[in-house]
Structure formats: structure tokens, C-alpha cells
Length: 180
Image 1 (cartoon, rainbow, N blue to C red):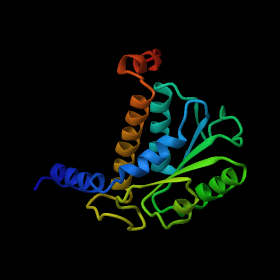
Image 2: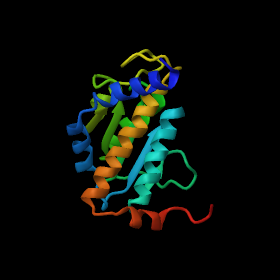
Image 3: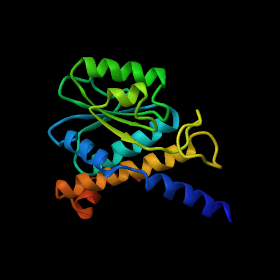
């Protein structure tokens, strides 16, 4: 079997395990009248930023934690925190602080029983292999399968949000960068 087919088989296996009810729980929390913040370290952070970009395209006010132009997080905001293991110290510390400050948490992790998974007001379990060896096993390096599957999962969530909010592809194009 080719490597491409093996990788696609792994992604399909993980995506087949995604619980759409968990996406619906997150959809309930993510509303246009709330500011959305995303948080993740390394490649998980890149997946979170990709999600933030799509949220912006469909009309949300969204920020990435750690950027110089990101405002302070306040009660009533939403934090989407991504960590494969659900144990990344920097992610946990900031998520715990946000929760204590009255922020709603959407946790994205491979382990629902992890500290991050337990912090979520909504928790999305993406059971792709992580660097710690959690989840569906993979021929790919480190957390690649988790990262790929998070990207697809969060894009599905954006599709759900765009349909709920009646945002068409044409409307989303209007917010796409014109400085390319």
C-alpha cells in the first residue's frame, strides 16, 4: 500500500471516531456576540490559528493568544484550547486562568480524561496519535495524525457555524485577505 493511502486510511479512521455531538456542544458555545480566543502550542497552535482564520472569514471576532495585538480575555469570552495530550503545561495554565475568570472553554484533545479535557465546557475528542502515543496509532511522526485530524474537525465545526449563521461561501470570500 502506498504511503498516501496509508495516511488517508489513518485520517479516515480518526475522522470516523469524531463524535458530532461534541461539535454541536462547541457550536452552542461559539456565538457571534462573543469574542473567541484560540490557544495551542507548536503545531496544535498552528491548527488553532487556522481555525481562527476561518472564524474570521465567517464573521467572528477572533484572536490568537500570544500575538502582540491580542486583547485581554474577559468573562463571557470563549477560549478554544488545543493540546493532543491535554497535559501541555503552558496550555493548561492559561486555560485554567481563563476558566477562573469566567471564560467558556472549548477543549480539543485526544484524551477526554486529560486535565484539558476536564476543563472544557465542551470537549472535542480527536483521537489521532500524539507524540505521547495517545490515540489511533500512526506511521506518521509525532503528533501529525492528531494535527491533521484537528484541522479537518475544526473546519467541519466552521462549516456547521457558517450554516447555522447563514454565511455563504460568497460572503466568506468578502472577508478573505485582499493583500495577497
